[in-house]
Length: 326
Ligand code: BTN
Image (cartoon, rainbow, N blue to C red; front, top):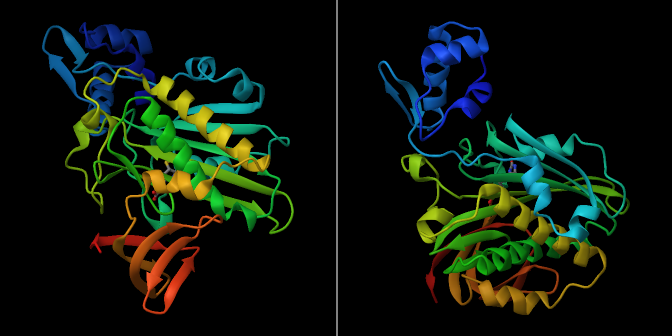
């Protein structure tokens, strides 16, 4: 059985490859090649098939490459890299990362994938993860501080991602509490932070990030919220996914390091710079409870400040819907 991940690297976007040539290469029948091409097309990758000439990709594929990603990490981040895994297809990079052994203190492991079959979002949602279109990565970090202290990590790391994307030239960026990255009022990226271990002792923290990069072929995909991607917002975008992945890993690892060193710059002000909810009427869902009020930024611990009729409430967990300007 020929796997599509073996065939894809042999397909080109500038030249046709004949079915017979590919069949000979893999020592399979032309029907097997045909079926494998059909599988590739189900992933949203468009393949032109011309009788007598063969198969050609309609657009160039921008595939992940482990060596390229490592080459673009900063020397400081490279020196703390324990392991890196670049996978083709996984259920969820967060699930895979949670199964890795805990890296030594002050080092990290990272898993990236071309595609997730069961990508996880916050609050049990699914994270739609088509092949070779976006960034799906998870960093495993041995947390040295208590989980209680880590409550500010969600907004802090979201700020690190927004700062990095802004430096790359993306505009109209914003953050929705606790860690959604928005662009032009639609969701561009999301973080899912999961921990296992002791409440007060060593804890394995998995920081998962999904960034929509090039979703043009998936515009009909069903997602339960307004979403966007980098390429629609930056038409002159030149970075490969490898370069983008490295820059994001650099930003997240530096963010995790500054958290461990207790050298977090002013969280409240940095959040205010990107906050898309400030002074907006919002509903906050936590379990079966809904609280409504006006968003008034966050506190030093990363809690949402919600102005209600009873006064200002500090909210540590919840899912927020914006209702409009107050
Ligand atoms: C959210 O905003 O709901 C969080 C989305 C997190 C998605 C990323 S993609 C890589 C990592 N693996 C997962 O299964 N989820 C996170």
